[in-house]
Amino acid sequence: MDVTLTVNGVTRAATGITPHTSLLHWLRREGLTGSKEGCAEGECGACAVLLSRPGEDGGTRLESVNGCLLPLAALNGQEVRTVEGLGTPAALHPVQEALAVRGGSQCGYCTPGFVVSMAAEYYRPEREVTEDGNGFALDAVHGNLCRCTGYRPIRDAAQVLGRPAQADPLLPALQRPAPGPRATRLTADGATFLREETLQDTLRVLQEYPDARVLAGGTDVSVEVNLRHARPPLLLAVDHLPDLTGLHWTPDTLEIGAALPLSDLQRRLSGRVPLLDAWFPLFASRLIRNRATLGGNLGTGSPIGDSPPVLLALDARVVLTSLSGEREVPLSAFFTGYRQTLRRPDELIRAVRVPLPLAPLSGFQKIAKRHLDDISSVAVAFALRVEDGVVRHARIGLGGVAATPLRALITEAALEGQPWTAEVAERAARLLSAEGTPQDDHRASAAYRAAMLGNALRRFHGEHPAPGTEAPV
Image 1 (cartoon, rainbow, N blue to C red):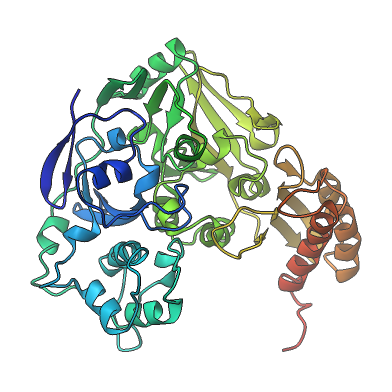
Image 2 (cartoon, rainbow, N blue to C red; image 1 turned 120 degrees about the horizontal axis):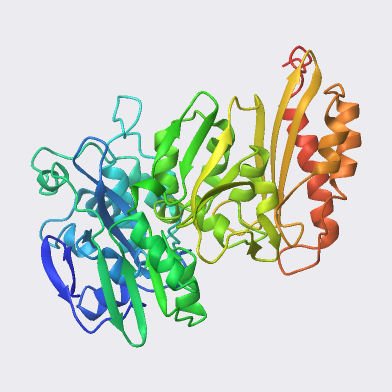
Protein backbone atom coordinates (compact mmCIF):
# COMPACT_ATOMS: atom_id res chain seq x y z
CA MET A 1 0.00 0.00 0.00
CA ASP A 2 1.18 3.51 -0.78
CA VAL A 3 1.45 5.95 2.12
CA THR A 4 0.19 9.44 1.41
CA LEU A 5 -0.21 12.45 3.65
CA THR A 6 -0.94 16.12 3.31
CA VAL A 7 1.94 18.40 4.24
CA ASN A 8 1.37 22.14 4.39
CA GLY A 9 -1.77 21.74 2.32
CA VAL A 10 -0.20 19.61 -0.42
CA THR A 11 -0.81 15.86 -0.68
CA ARG A 12 2.39 13.88 -1.11
CA ALA A 13 3.09 10.21 -1.77
CA ALA A 14 5.80 8.79 0.49
CA THR A 15 7.97 6.46 -1.55
CA GLY A 16 11.03 4.49 -0.57
CA ILE A 17 10.09 4.31 3.09
CA THR A 18 10.04 1.45 5.60
CA PRO A 19 7.81 0.84 8.63
CA HIS A 20 10.56 2.39 10.76
CA THR A 21 11.03 5.60 8.76
CA SER A 22 10.17 8.54 10.98
CA LEU A 23 8.17 11.54 9.86
CA LEU A 24 11.18 13.75 10.64
CA HIS A 25 13.61 11.88 8.41
CA TRP A 26 11.14 11.83 5.53
CA LEU A 27 10.40 15.56 5.87
CA ARG A 28 14.07 16.44 5.73
CA ARG A 29 14.55 14.14 2.74
CA GLU A 30 11.70 16.05 1.07
CA GLY A 31 13.54 19.32 1.59
CA LEU A 32 11.52 20.53 4.61
CA THR A 33 14.59 21.07 6.77
CA GLY A 34 13.07 23.52 9.23
CA SER A 35 12.40 20.46 11.41
CA LYS A 36 15.68 19.44 13.05
CA GLU A 37 16.92 16.30 14.78
CA GLY A 38 18.33 17.07 18.19
CA CYS A 39 17.89 14.32 20.77
CA ALA A 40 15.90 11.72 18.77
CA GLU A 41 13.93 10.86 21.92
CA GLY A 42 11.40 13.67 22.34
CA GLU A 43 13.21 15.83 24.88
CA CYS A 44 14.28 18.87 22.84
CA GLY A 45 11.38 19.71 20.51
CA ALA A 46 13.58 20.69 17.56
CA CYS A 47 11.59 18.26 15.40
CA ALA A 48 8.13 19.57 16.35
CA VAL A 49 5.39 19.58 13.73
CA LEU A 50 1.65 20.24 13.85
CA LEU A 51 -0.67 17.25 13.49
CA SER A 52 -4.29 17.83 12.48
CA ARG A 53 -6.64 15.93 14.77
CA PRO A 54 -10.44 15.88 15.05
CA GLY A 55 -11.73 18.63 17.34
CA GLU A 56 -14.68 18.38 19.71
CA ASP A 57 -16.59 20.91 17.57
CA GLY A 58 -16.29 18.83 14.40
CA GLY A 59 -13.41 20.89 13.04
CA THR A 60 -9.66 20.42 13.22
CA ARG A 61 -7.41 20.74 16.23
CA LEU A 62 -3.70 21.45 15.65
CA GLU A 63 -1.48 19.61 18.11
CA SER A 64 2.29 19.83 18.37
CA VAL A 65 4.05 16.46 18.24
CA ASN A 66 7.60 15.18 17.97
CA GLY A 67 8.33 14.31 14.35
CA CYS A 68 11.20 12.06 15.42
CA LEU A 69 8.80 9.81 17.36
CA LEU A 70 6.18 9.36 14.65
CA PRO A 71 6.51 6.46 12.21
CA LEU A 72 5.60 7.95 8.86
CA ALA A 73 3.31 5.03 8.04
CA ALA A 74 1.22 5.86 11.11
CA LEU A 75 0.21 9.13 9.43
CA ASN A 76 -1.18 7.57 6.26
CA GLY A 77 -4.05 9.78 5.05
CA GLN A 78 -3.51 12.44 7.71
CA GLU A 79 -2.37 16.06 7.66
CA VAL A 80 0.71 17.71 9.14
CA ARG A 81 2.09 21.20 9.00
CA THR A 82 5.72 22.15 9.42
CA VAL A 83 7.26 25.50 10.23
CA GLU A 84 7.55 26.15 6.48
CA GLY A 85 3.77 26.00 6.27
CA LEU A 86 3.18 28.72 8.84
CA GLY A 87 4.75 31.75 7.23
CA THR A 88 7.29 33.09 4.75
CA PRO A 89 10.06 35.72 5.01
CA ALA A 90 7.73 38.12 3.23
CA ALA A 91 4.68 37.27 5.35
CA LEU A 92 5.66 36.05 8.81
CA HIS A 93 3.19 34.14 10.91
CA PRO A 94 2.19 36.11 14.06
CA VAL A 95 4.20 33.69 16.21
CA GLN A 96 7.28 34.11 14.01
CA GLU A 97 6.91 37.88 14.03
CA ALA A 98 6.54 38.03 17.81
CA LEU A 99 9.69 35.95 18.28
CA ALA A 100 11.67 38.02 15.78
CA VAL A 101 10.65 41.39 17.21
CA ARG A 102 11.39 40.35 20.82
CA GLY A 103 14.74 38.67 20.17
CA GLY A 104 13.47 35.14 20.67
CA SER A 105 15.61 33.62 17.89
CA GLN A 106 19.35 33.38 17.41
CA CYS A 107 20.91 30.31 15.78
CA GLY A 108 17.61 29.07 14.34
CA TYR A 109 18.21 25.43 15.29
CA CYS A 110 15.63 25.37 18.08
CA THR A 111 13.46 28.27 16.95
CA PRO A 112 11.37 26.31 14.38
CA GLY A 113 10.30 23.91 17.12
CA PHE A 114 9.34 26.77 19.39
CA VAL A 115 7.36 28.35 16.55
CA VAL A 116 5.43 25.11 16.01
CA SER A 117 4.66 24.53 19.70
CA MET A 118 3.63 28.16 20.16
CA ALA A 119 1.45 27.99 17.05
CA ALA A 120 -0.40 24.99 18.50
CA GLU A 121 -1.15 27.04 21.60
CA TYR A 122 -1.99 30.10 19.48
CA TYR A 123 -4.76 28.13 17.75
CA ARG A 124 -5.90 26.17 20.83
CA PRO A 125 -9.70 26.56 20.90
CA GLU A 126 -9.89 26.86 24.70
CA ARG A 127 -7.40 29.73 24.90
CA GLU A 128 -9.16 32.86 26.16
CA VAL A 129 -7.84 36.33 25.38
CA THR A 130 -9.05 38.91 27.91
CA GLU A 131 -8.01 42.33 29.18
CA ASP A 132 -6.05 40.53 31.92
CA GLY A 133 -4.02 38.33 29.62
CA ASN A 134 -3.87 36.34 26.41
CA GLY A 135 -4.40 32.93 28.03
CA PHE A 136 -1.17 31.53 26.58
CA ALA A 137 -0.21 28.44 28.61
CA LEU A 138 3.57 28.30 28.80
CA ASP A 139 3.51 24.53 29.25
CA ALA A 140 3.03 24.51 25.47
CA VAL A 141 6.81 24.96 25.16
CA HIS A 142 7.93 22.80 28.10
CA GLY A 143 9.15 20.21 25.59
CA ASN A 144 11.25 22.70 23.62
CA LEU A 145 14.88 23.22 24.53
CA CYS A 146 16.53 26.59 23.86
CA ARG A 147 20.26 26.25 23.40
CA CYS A 148 21.33 29.88 23.10
CA THR A 149 18.65 32.57 23.27
CA GLY A 150 17.34 32.16 26.79
CA TYR A 151 13.70 31.76 27.66
CA ARG A 152 12.73 35.30 28.67
CA PRO A 153 12.36 36.74 25.13
CA ILE A 154 10.50 33.57 24.08
CA ARG A 155 8.11 34.03 27.00
CA ASP A 156 7.74 37.70 26.12
CA ALA A 157 6.73 36.75 22.58
CA ALA A 158 4.19 34.25 23.88
CA GLN A 159 2.56 36.81 26.15
CA VAL A 160 1.73 39.27 23.35
CA LEU A 161 -0.03 36.83 21.03
CA GLY A 162 -3.68 37.71 20.57
CA ARG A 163 -6.43 35.82 18.80
CA PRO A 164 -5.94 34.62 15.21
CA ALA A 165 -7.19 37.27 12.80
CA GLN A 166 -10.28 36.58 10.72
CA ALA A 167 -8.07 36.67 7.62
CA ASP A 168 -5.70 34.04 9.02
CA PRO A 169 -5.11 31.62 6.11
CA LEU A 170 -5.24 28.57 8.41
CA LEU A 171 -8.69 29.24 9.84
CA PRO A 172 -10.66 27.74 6.92
CA ALA A 173 -8.71 24.48 7.28
CA LEU A 174 -9.39 24.42 11.02
CA GLN A 175 -13.13 24.62 10.40
CA ARG A 176 -13.09 21.43 8.31
CA PRO A 177 -13.01 17.93 9.84
CA ALA A 178 -9.54 16.48 10.18
CA PRO A 179 -8.84 13.16 8.47
CA GLY A 180 -8.32 10.33 10.94
CA PRO A 181 -5.95 7.36 10.83
CA ARG A 182 -6.43 5.12 7.79
CA ALA A 183 -6.19 1.33 7.54
CA THR A 184 -2.63 0.69 6.39
CA ARG A 185 -0.32 -2.14 5.44
CA LEU A 186 3.24 -1.25 4.53
CA THR A 187 5.87 -3.97 4.08
CA ALA A 188 9.47 -3.10 3.32
CA ASP A 189 12.96 -3.94 4.49
CA GLY A 190 11.78 -7.14 6.17
CA ALA A 191 9.21 -5.40 8.38
CA THR A 192 5.51 -4.54 8.30
CA PHE A 193 3.42 -1.67 9.61
CA LEU A 194 -0.21 -2.71 9.99
CA ARG A 195 -3.35 -0.84 11.01
CA GLU A 196 -6.49 -2.95 10.76
CA GLU A 197 -10.03 -1.61 10.45
CA THR A 198 -11.51 -3.16 13.61
CA LEU A 199 -10.58 -4.42 17.05
CA GLN A 200 -11.48 -7.99 16.09
CA ASP A 201 -9.18 -7.87 13.07
CA THR A 202 -6.44 -6.41 15.26
CA LEU A 203 -6.84 -9.20 17.81
CA ARG A 204 -6.68 -11.82 15.06
CA VAL A 205 -3.34 -10.41 13.94
CA LEU A 206 -2.09 -10.39 17.52
CA GLN A 207 -3.14 -14.02 17.99
CA GLU A 208 -1.32 -15.04 14.82
CA TYR A 209 1.74 -12.86 15.49
CA PRO A 210 2.18 -12.68 19.28
CA ASP A 211 5.55 -10.93 18.88
CA ALA A 212 3.92 -7.93 17.18
CA ARG A 213 4.86 -4.61 18.74
CA VAL A 214 1.66 -2.76 19.66
CA LEU A 215 1.81 0.91 18.69
CA ALA A 216 -0.43 3.69 20.01
CA GLY A 217 1.42 6.98 20.45
CA GLY A 218 4.84 5.60 19.56
CA THR A 219 6.66 7.66 22.20
CA ASP A 220 8.39 4.57 23.62
CA VAL A 221 9.03 2.23 20.70
CA SER A 222 10.29 5.08 18.51
CA VAL A 223 13.02 5.88 21.04
CA GLU A 224 14.18 2.27 20.74
CA VAL A 225 14.14 2.56 16.95
CA ASN A 226 16.05 5.85 16.97
CA LEU A 227 18.64 5.26 19.69
CA ARG A 228 18.92 1.48 20.03
CA HIS A 229 18.35 0.69 16.36
CA ALA A 230 15.52 -1.70 17.20
CA ARG A 231 13.61 -2.95 14.16
CA PRO A 232 10.43 -4.73 15.29
CA PRO A 233 9.31 -6.98 12.42
CA LEU A 234 5.64 -6.05 12.92
CA LEU A 235 4.26 -2.76 14.20
CA LEU A 236 0.55 -3.12 14.95
CA ALA A 237 -1.24 0.23 15.31
CA VAL A 238 -4.21 0.54 17.70
CA ASP A 239 -4.51 4.33 17.97
CA HIS A 240 -7.70 4.49 15.88
CA LEU A 241 -9.84 1.87 17.64
CA PRO A 242 -12.94 3.33 19.37
CA ASP A 243 -12.84 0.51 21.94
CA LEU A 244 -9.43 1.79 23.05
CA THR A 245 -9.97 5.55 22.82
CA GLY A 246 -13.16 6.13 24.80
CA LEU A 247 -13.85 7.74 28.17
CA HIS A 248 -16.89 6.44 30.02
CA TRP A 249 -18.40 7.30 33.40
CA THR A 250 -20.80 5.10 35.39
CA PRO A 251 -21.99 5.64 38.98
CA ASP A 252 -19.29 3.20 40.13
CA THR A 253 -16.47 3.42 37.60
CA LEU A 254 -14.44 5.66 35.33
CA GLU A 255 -13.19 3.74 32.29
CA ILE A 256 -10.30 5.23 30.32
CA GLY A 257 -9.39 3.85 26.90
CA ALA A 258 -5.85 2.52 26.81
CA ALA A 259 -5.04 4.34 23.54
CA LEU A 260 -6.58 7.70 24.47
CA PRO A 261 -3.81 10.35 24.26
CA LEU A 262 -3.06 11.92 27.63
CA SER A 263 -3.77 15.44 26.40
CA ASP A 264 -7.24 14.29 25.27
CA LEU A 265 -7.76 12.62 28.63
CA GLN A 266 -6.73 15.74 30.53
CA ARG A 267 -9.01 17.95 28.49
CA ARG A 268 -12.01 15.61 28.71
CA LEU A 269 -11.66 14.98 32.45
CA SER A 270 -11.55 18.75 33.03
CA GLY A 271 -10.29 18.41 36.62
CA ARG A 272 -12.79 15.76 37.74
CA VAL A 273 -9.97 13.46 38.94
CA PRO A 274 -7.71 15.71 41.04
CA LEU A 275 -4.91 13.15 41.37
CA LEU A 276 -4.63 12.79 37.60
CA ASP A 277 -4.84 16.56 37.28
CA ALA A 278 -1.83 16.90 39.60
CA TRP A 279 0.07 14.31 37.58
CA PHE A 280 -0.54 15.50 34.00
CA PRO A 281 1.79 18.55 34.05
CA LEU A 282 4.65 16.42 35.41
CA PHE A 283 4.37 13.70 32.77
CA ALA A 284 6.95 14.62 30.13
CA SER A 285 5.87 17.58 27.93
CA ARG A 286 2.78 18.53 25.99
CA LEU A 287 4.56 17.36 22.83
CA ILE A 288 4.72 13.89 24.39
CA ARG A 289 1.31 13.98 26.11
CA ASN A 290 -0.32 14.73 22.76
CA ARG A 291 0.66 11.17 21.72
CA ALA A 292 1.42 9.15 24.88
CA THR A 293 -1.22 6.84 26.36
CA LEU A 294 -1.94 4.99 29.59
CA GLY A 295 -1.87 1.67 27.77
CA GLY A 296 1.60 2.36 26.44
CA ASN A 297 2.93 3.53 29.79
CA LEU A 298 1.58 0.45 31.55
CA GLY A 299 2.42 -1.99 28.78
CA THR A 300 6.16 -1.32 28.93
CA GLY A 301 6.19 -2.59 32.53
CA SER A 302 8.81 0.02 33.39
CA PRO A 303 9.44 0.53 37.11
CA ILE A 304 9.92 4.26 36.51
CA GLY A 305 6.79 4.96 34.48
CA ASP A 306 4.90 7.83 36.09
CA SER A 307 1.34 6.62 35.53
CA PRO A 308 1.51 3.37 37.57
CA PRO A 309 1.99 5.06 40.97
CA VAL A 310 -0.98 7.34 40.28
CA LEU A 311 -3.19 4.52 39.07
CA LEU A 312 -2.15 2.29 41.97
CA ALA A 313 -3.24 5.02 44.39
CA LEU A 314 -6.56 5.16 42.54
CA ASP A 315 -7.05 1.37 42.98
CA ALA A 316 -7.20 1.02 39.20
CA ARG A 317 -7.82 -2.20 37.35
CA VAL A 318 -6.56 -3.16 33.89
CA VAL A 319 -8.94 -4.52 31.25
CA LEU A 320 -7.24 -7.05 28.95
CA THR A 321 -8.94 -8.27 25.78
CA SER A 322 -8.28 -11.05 23.27
CA LEU A 323 -10.25 -13.20 20.86
CA SER A 324 -11.10 -15.50 23.75
CA GLY A 325 -12.71 -12.67 25.76
CA GLU A 326 -11.96 -10.01 28.35
CA ARG A 327 -10.51 -10.19 31.81
CA GLU A 328 -9.94 -7.57 34.46
CA VAL A 329 -6.98 -7.59 36.85
CA PRO A 330 -5.98 -5.25 39.67
CA LEU A 331 -3.09 -3.04 38.64
CA SER A 332 -1.40 -4.01 41.91
CA ALA A 333 -1.12 -7.57 40.51
CA PHE A 334 -0.40 -6.59 36.90
CA PHE A 335 3.38 -6.15 37.19
CA THR A 336 5.14 -9.48 37.73
CA GLY A 337 8.81 -8.53 37.37
CA TYR A 338 11.18 -6.07 35.76
CA ARG A 339 9.38 -5.02 32.54
CA GLN A 340 7.11 -8.04 32.87
CA THR A 341 3.32 -8.02 33.21
CA LEU A 342 0.34 -10.37 33.29
CA ARG A 343 -0.61 -9.48 29.71
CA ARG A 344 -0.50 -12.52 27.45
CA PRO A 345 1.04 -12.11 23.98
CA ASP A 346 -2.41 -12.40 22.36
CA GLU A 347 -3.96 -9.71 24.57
CA LEU A 348 -4.32 -5.96 24.30
CA ILE A 349 -4.69 -3.54 27.18
CA ARG A 350 -8.12 -2.21 26.26
CA ALA A 351 -8.87 0.13 29.16
CA VAL A 352 -8.11 1.20 32.71
CA ARG A 353 -10.97 1.24 35.24
CA VAL A 354 -10.95 3.49 38.30
CA PRO A 355 -13.50 2.80 41.05
CA LEU A 356 -15.71 5.62 42.27
CA PRO A 357 -16.11 7.59 44.47
CA LEU A 358 -12.58 8.95 44.58
CA ALA A 359 -10.66 9.39 47.82
CA PRO A 360 -10.95 13.09 48.76
CA LEU A 361 -7.31 13.69 49.78
CA SER A 362 -4.83 13.03 46.99
CA GLY A 363 -1.50 14.20 45.67
CA PHE A 364 1.38 13.29 43.38
CA GLN A 365 5.04 14.01 43.96
CA LYS A 366 7.78 13.45 41.41
CA ILE A 367 11.40 13.70 42.46
CA ALA A 368 13.71 14.17 39.47
CA LYS A 369 16.83 16.08 38.50
CA ARG A 370 14.69 18.44 36.45
CA HIS A 371 11.26 19.49 37.67
CA LEU A 372 9.66 18.95 34.27
CA ASP A 373 10.17 16.56 31.37
CA ASP A 374 12.49 14.16 33.17
CA ILE A 375 12.60 10.55 34.31
CA SER A 376 11.64 10.13 37.95
CA SER A 377 14.14 9.14 40.60
CA VAL A 378 11.13 8.55 42.85
CA ALA A 379 7.41 9.00 42.17
CA VAL A 380 4.80 8.82 44.93
CA ALA A 381 1.01 9.11 44.70
CA PHE A 382 -1.36 9.34 47.67
CA ALA A 383 -5.11 8.85 47.93
CA LEU A 384 -6.69 9.00 51.41
CA ARG A 385 -10.15 9.17 52.85
CA VAL A 386 -10.21 10.84 56.29
CA GLU A 387 -13.48 10.84 58.23
CA ASP A 388 -13.86 12.47 61.67
CA GLY A 389 -10.10 12.92 61.74
CA VAL A 390 -9.39 9.20 61.22
CA VAL A 391 -7.85 7.60 58.12
CA ARG A 392 -10.47 5.19 56.80
CA HIS A 393 -8.80 4.41 53.47
CA ALA A 394 -5.20 4.79 52.33
CA ARG A 395 -3.57 3.97 49.02
CA ILE A 396 0.03 4.89 48.21
CA GLY A 397 1.58 4.10 44.82
CA LEU A 398 5.36 4.07 44.35
CA GLY A 399 7.61 4.19 41.31
CA GLY A 400 11.39 4.06 40.97
CA VAL A 401 12.03 2.15 44.20
CA ALA A 402 11.79 -1.50 43.08
CA ALA A 403 11.85 -3.73 40.01
CA THR A 404 8.16 -2.93 39.51
CA PRO A 405 5.78 -0.15 40.49
CA LEU A 406 4.13 -1.14 43.77
CA ARG A 407 1.77 -0.16 46.53
CA ALA A 408 3.20 0.77 49.93
CA LEU A 409 1.17 -1.88 51.74
CA ILE A 410 2.95 -1.62 55.10
CA THR A 411 2.52 2.14 55.24
CA GLU A 412 -1.10 1.94 54.14
CA ALA A 413 -1.86 -0.54 56.94
CA ALA A 414 -0.11 1.68 59.47
CA LEU A 415 -2.28 4.65 58.47
CA GLU A 416 -5.71 3.05 58.23
CA GLY A 417 -7.71 3.32 61.44
CA GLN A 418 -5.31 5.91 62.89
CA PRO A 419 -5.90 9.62 63.46
CA TRP A 420 -4.54 11.80 60.64
CA THR A 421 -2.08 13.67 62.86
CA ALA A 422 1.49 14.82 62.43
CA GLU A 423 2.65 12.13 64.88
CA VAL A 424 0.98 9.31 62.94
CA ALA A 425 2.22 10.75 59.64
CA GLU A 426 5.77 10.83 61.02
CA ARG A 427 5.64 7.19 62.09
CA ALA A 428 4.21 6.24 58.71
CA ALA A 429 6.88 8.29 56.93
CA ARG A 430 9.60 6.24 58.60
CA LEU A 431 7.90 3.07 57.42
CA LEU A 432 7.49 4.46 53.91
CA SER A 433 11.25 5.12 53.73
CA ALA A 434 11.81 1.36 53.97
CA GLU A 435 9.25 0.31 51.35
CA GLY A 436 10.52 -1.21 48.13
CA THR A 437 14.13 -2.05 47.41
CA PRO A 438 15.79 1.26 46.47
CA GLN A 439 19.09 0.95 44.63
CA ASP A 440 21.99 3.17 43.65
CA ASP A 441 22.03 4.25 40.02
CA HIS A 442 22.85 7.30 37.89
CA ARG A 443 19.59 9.03 38.87
CA ALA A 444 19.87 8.75 42.66
CA SER A 445 21.36 6.76 45.51
CA ALA A 446 19.39 4.26 47.58
CA ALA A 447 19.74 6.47 50.65
CA TYR A 448 18.41 9.48 48.77
CA ARG A 449 15.43 7.53 47.48
CA ALA A 450 14.60 6.28 50.98
CA ALA A 451 14.80 9.81 52.35
CA MET A 452 12.58 11.17 49.59
CA LEU A 453 9.91 8.54 50.27
CA GLY A 454 9.62 9.59 53.90
CA ASN A 455 9.70 13.28 53.04
CA ALA A 456 6.95 12.79 50.48
CA LEU A 457 4.52 11.65 53.17
CA ARG A 458 5.57 14.43 55.54
CA ARG A 459 4.97 16.97 52.80
CA PHE A 460 1.63 15.39 51.87
CA HIS A 461 0.41 15.62 55.45
CA GLY A 462 1.56 19.22 55.69
CA GLU A 463 -0.42 20.08 52.55
CA HIS A 464 -3.48 18.01 53.55
CA PRO A 465 -4.05 18.20 57.31
CA ALA A 466 -7.23 16.77 58.83
CA PRO A 467 -10.18 19.15 58.47
CA GLY A 468 -10.25 21.55 61.40
CA THR A 469 -6.53 21.13 62.20
CA GLU A 470 -5.06 23.48 59.62
CA ALA A 471 -2.29 25.71 60.86
CA PRO A 472 -3.25 29.40 61.20
CA VAL A 473 -2.29 31.56 58.24
